[in-house]
Image (cartoon, rainbow, N blue to C red; front, side):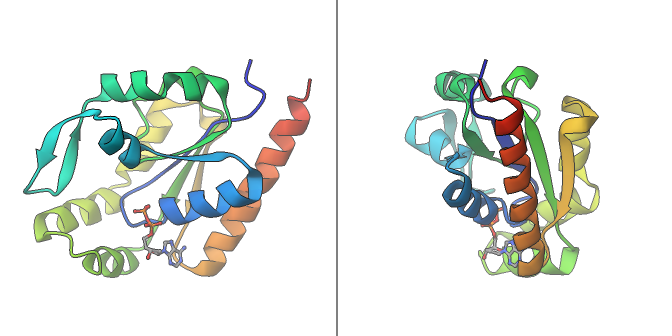
Length: 173
Ligand code: DAT
């Protein structure tokens, strides 16, 4: 039994995962687990895709790398996929959503290659991550939240903080 919850914050790149996770890590004491960092630092990849400018993730290595931490609990997992994590590890899945114009501006300012930018815009419009979350986890633990403005972010953070507080009360030993 975990004494702290694990939360996934997922969504298309640029939606605001890192910003939400960093704020929540400070306010809740949960640890921000950036899958991107783990993939890079612990070598959970089969090389780098120069065209897409991203690591080719080895999911088995990644799961092995984070298994002990995840089983212990207390992590906010930050990644643009969610279907790979075993259901038994996860207590809440937050799917952040953003309007196309906002996403375009955010990705453009990151100098994304055109193909990668378009792929991510399409993915957001087609709700790929939301569908993936709904297909992979029980509907009660999947929450869709808007991340267009700083007001959105504040209310999302407040809502997730409230959820964490409740989880801790419900699971106090
Ligand atoms: P991700 O980790 O999903 O790739 P990020 O946290 O790095 O996204 O955010 C990308 C950029 O967009 C960053 O400059 C912060 C900004 N941003 C994210 N969410 C926002 C929001 N709800 N309101 C305003 N700006 C936001």
